[in-house]
Amino acid sequence: MLSRIAESLFWIGRYVERADGTARILDVHLERLNQLPLNEQRTVSANLLAVMGATPGTQEDGPPGVQELLDRLAFDTAQANSIAGSLAAARENARRARETVSAPVWEFLNATWNGLAAHRQDVVGTYRFCSWVIERTATVQGLADSTMSRDDSWQFLSLGRSLERADMTARMLATGDEQAFRLSWVNMLRCAGAYESFLRSRRAAFGESFAAEFLLLDRLFPRSVVSSLRQVEQALIALDPQYHRTAAMDQARRLVGQARTFLEFHHTEDLMAELPEHLERVQAACAGASDAITAKYFSQAAERAWTGEKI
Image (tube, rainbow, N blue to C red; front, side, top):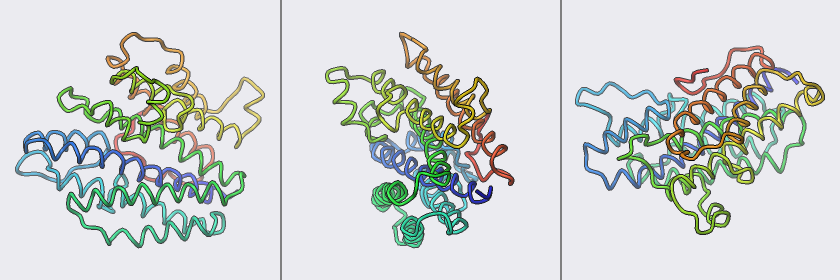
């Protein structure tokens, strides 16, 4: 496969998942922001922009407010980390890979991009926009899974999606590090679409530490960090099977495997106290793996990644 096609497929997976994850996070935080006084709204907005890697504009009157949060995370097409920017970039990459992606995937991405301008850019409009985006991205992913052969094309798409999903779940758990603004465990689970799955698996064990443990470590829930990292490893093995038979492995798989095994086998009595360290390690592993994948498979420089990614 041509490296430019593989790169486009990889970034389609990442950008679609990024739009979905950002819409979920923004939807949950908007509900909370509406219940806070103005000064706390500004604090939470600035914190959320920082966690999501979105660059705030110049503010002469203090931290960014809710409207700038909406502009930067939802509607600014110049921001690679915004919903609109991610969907526009996914559509552009699909256009470059028209001969590889299935027609339903291209047509739905194109229709989604054409529908971006139809949404109101106030708080109420953003609620509806986030719900619309979650539905559209789920359909794109479903179309890809049901209309693309499980060859290298699909593996690169799945690789990008799984890598971004691990990063997005880590960012979701990192939103609201300050105790006064932390998401409730119910909202954390709903943000990831995990509320019902958590209740069925945990039954009477409620609390933020149990929710964080579920979103980090549950092997069966597809949006958990461990499950997403395992899917990344499976895609890397499928793309280069020889490493499955020997002790040698490439840099991307080494970074992802180290992050996953540390989470799975690291026992702690106080997960919440160590949560920031775990999340930073996961995000660093995702950033490093993305760079390693780019160096190994793609001849061109990496596309726009998360602002502030550190290895």
